Picture 1: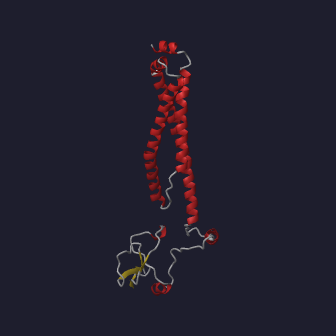
Picture 2 (picture 1 turned 135 degrees about the vertical axis):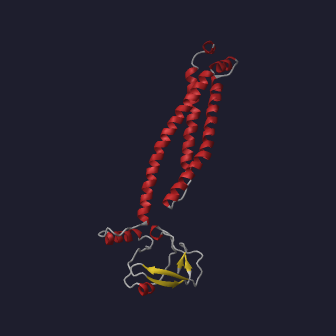
Picture 3 (picture 1 turned 30 degrees about the vertical axis):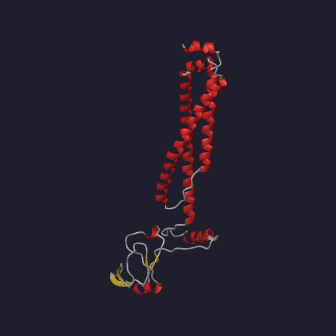
Length: 246
């Protein structure tokens, strides 16, 4: 049987020549069918992979060396089988072992490391973003003191002016949310594809909960800070504010 590992397109009935390495004898094996076969680190290479019986192997080489063994464990017995394989191979350093359980654990550890790194980056970038937002709003409010004083002099209440500034902060939060939804989602999916290409498995799950929490925190900050900043600079009377603006 020829497998789909480098064997697609080989017609049934074709005889494939091969040579036994240690005696340099050449033989031919006839293709009787094709089947799928999972590719992994043990069956890489450019030559087509063939599946034959023990009788065929013994015909060409009676003491052939076993190159690799694949074990499919019964569901729920995977860890028990892995423990037994570890016990059998622990004394032979020449035998390498690849287990899906161990790969999954390594992937989980890698995922946790990336998550921790992401949290640190998020905290740093969020802190920079919050400080930049506060500085921008503060400069905007201070530079518009005369405008706010004029609005107050013609009858606008502090509550109305505060709501105007708060609305600007909410608008800023909505812009940040849209950018995160478009740019952030694209970057997240790109990073996942890079990791998926490197690791070979994994499922992309959109971080809906994290996005909702992040959006809520940003909206809270953007809606509270502008009002607090305006309150801190508008404690004097309207006349004093007009004088200071002049």
